[in-house]
Length: 301
Picture 1 (cartoon, rainbow, N blue to C red):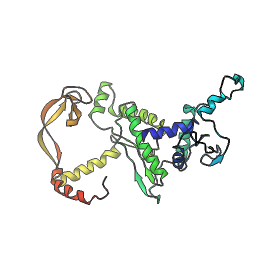
Picture 2: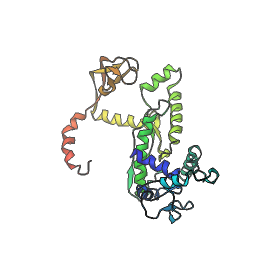
Picture 3: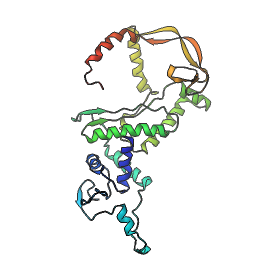
């Protein structure tokens, strides 16, 4: 899925000859607005007549002169041909110029903004929110490119897609990073969010940025506080003493999967076992009910 997405993106935009996958690609691209397609070859490996895409109407096929395949190009560029007679190579795809151009067009048209009143069937696509550590890396690119492929596919299939983005920005790691840099946690966190948001936008992802949230914002965590108070009132939230994995550098409790070879996954410090009074949710009270209800999930993957 990941490779297929970028094969479409770079191949179509840079006028590189495509093989047997092109009819499927055009069917998908025909439903995606604001995409330009240059001339491509439809049947490079067969003797059937080739077609090209009308540059004025990106998704309309028209008849045209056959576009040479690799063997034909080689023959045309033989030693008998004078250098001055050779055709100029096709213009390279200028990503730094074209990508921002179309991203701005998408933003102005708000084509990725979900409308709650849209009558089409709804599809909610959500990847795990990134932690705003300061810069995105290839792990972010891989994760959000795959989610973007699925969101664009569902949109091309006629769904009203909600594809939001947010920031997992609340917790001790952000506070400790701010302490190290002698700055306020809010200043540090929101500066990182601005940087990573700008980097993610440069990827051209089909995100509805009007739905953006940050878990460190009061407009978000006030709902978590209300939910916690409801759980506390009903006795589903309670306190007791228990042994925990303690990270002496991050000064926080770690889940078992966050301890790798006896060290904290983020700080690398040796994890200590401590007994602390902490909060628990009484989820085991509903274990039998949840288990028995699994049989009713007929569409569960």
